[in-house]
Amino acid sequence: MKYHLITLGCPKNKVDSDGMEMILRDASIAVTDDPGSADIVIVNTCGFLEAAKEESIGVLQDLARRKRRNQMLIAAGCLAQRNGDEVLARVPKVDGLLGTRRWMDVVDLVDQIRSGRTGKKRALQRYSLLGDPDAVFDDAVPRPPVAAGSAYLKISDGCNAPCAFCTIPS
Image (tube, rainbow, N blue to C red; front, side):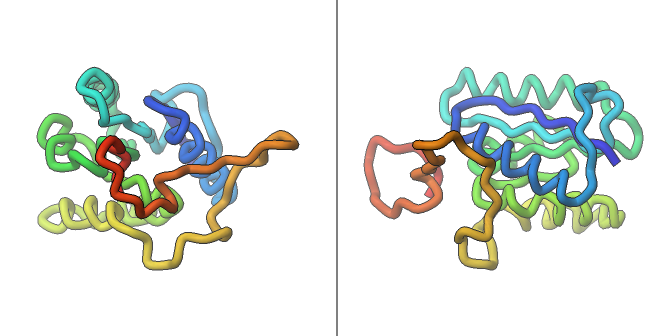
């Protein structure tokens, strides 16, 4: 099986995408640069600014138009988390939604889609990977290696402050 991952938006999405790639590789799913030859196409979306939201929807719609039979299209990230209903309404060929706090479950979502659970339960399964993970978010979550003297710190993964200016999903 092969995957293609498109990352839109902020550096937070890049960190999440790097983590998803590590998990997919660990599951023996190979990467491809060609979305047309991928079995799984994942778009790590941005949904904070209207322009970014429309770019994410546009990329998903373009991929949906070219989607092959049995190819999976997954919307991940902020837009999937914040506006999942809208994503499904505007891009009905999306097979799964993966929220900002569930990216580490990407293989579980792929397995659910592959298992053929469709029909009436399809929307429920899509949304099942939008909330908080069952396990405590800790060092068990893979992080890509960093250069000496730096480390990834994602405020959205550990901040409970109710800052009025912050739009990162809590």
